[in-house]
Length: 578
Image (tube, rainbow, N blue to C red; front, side, top):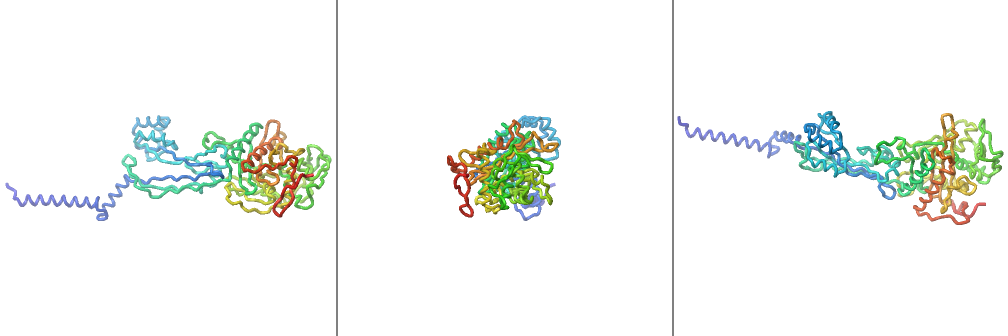
């Protein structure tokens, strides 16, 4: 039977029309967006399988010293990660990968099995880029890399207690890294990438959000002085077989902390195995009884009453004094001495008589005005405020003990601030761990004249007959006070455990720096502040003044320099003391 020609032509035409309709529909779906809602669906399905949003890590801000020397920087590293569902299936690759990562193969398999339902696990973080690239070059399925940042501390243990450190995710954990974490950390950005079915990036499709770099922090610390202080303190702690030590140096003109070191210290670049006790910044967190370093501040209160002056005579006979049930002793009977010599010899009897002659709150209020018993305002995590008791009724022994630094506690930084007020002729400046481009203003906490008189007294402590001759600097006249404190044991104050303290300033006629040194439990037979802490002051202060380009001040034969008021805000040298 012959098929009519018209029927054959009709069938061919219908097939052609169907093909054309099919091609037009495909074009609508894939080529002409917006003409068919199916396009959006198919495009979404395709994107869901190939398009990914990747995080662009932000660079953390840099911490520098006052001169721009880096103390904490972030360097790019590569972290390796895996998709367990892809990687676990290939036993040969897992074995090779474990060897390349120096990992135990069984441990790696166990980890991949545990996270089998996940699409992301870290294999090893913060590898040097070249090491990571050598592994990624194998193109093992399921193994990928991502750029991150790792914190590095160029000064190591020298600045560790001030700077602190971050964790592996660059979040601050200690020190100023923690205090300024919100300021230092940046904000991550994002980008869109096209990946193949194996998760490999085949196209970078552009940045969605640019990362924001963290802000920098410029510290007041001078790294040169920090190295100097670190070296001398570390050597002294070792030589005296001491338990620990701290040193703080302040710029009296600005209130900036120029150096702050502690022993024992740690290396923030290699923290594995370090003891937690080594992490704390003892100069700010540890409070202690300051002992005889409080005597000049008690004298400051006495001078302010107007009833005492530097040459007021005090009868210390017979070398001891009975206060309540306690007997307070001097090293020997100094007889009748003036108030200046009470400081020179660190007379317990003399300062007790002065304290008992005043209302208890007179001394307590002076200590408070100098910054004791309150935070310094540096914003350091874990700062202690010390203990400055405020009693409604003082017993005589409490009053006497308080006057020479017992029954109260301070930190090394607080003690440095208090001495800085005296060195700055009564002006109290805010203490700062951040660089001050403009010297801050201050408040007149104590009178200029009496501050100058106390500096004169403190200079005699370093001269022949004083308790701190080893603190004297050949090229700069200095002033300061020793403290030798019995430490508290299980049964009260121990007879064989001491704290050696020295607080000083230099140059004495116009102090630029104040340095406080604290050595805990020296164990070589020497324990007096003048023997243990004072020599550290001399070395560090001299080196620091040279770095500050302060010209030498000592004139041969004229080492004893007094102060004469020349103007309402200035004292100048006027010749030897009588």
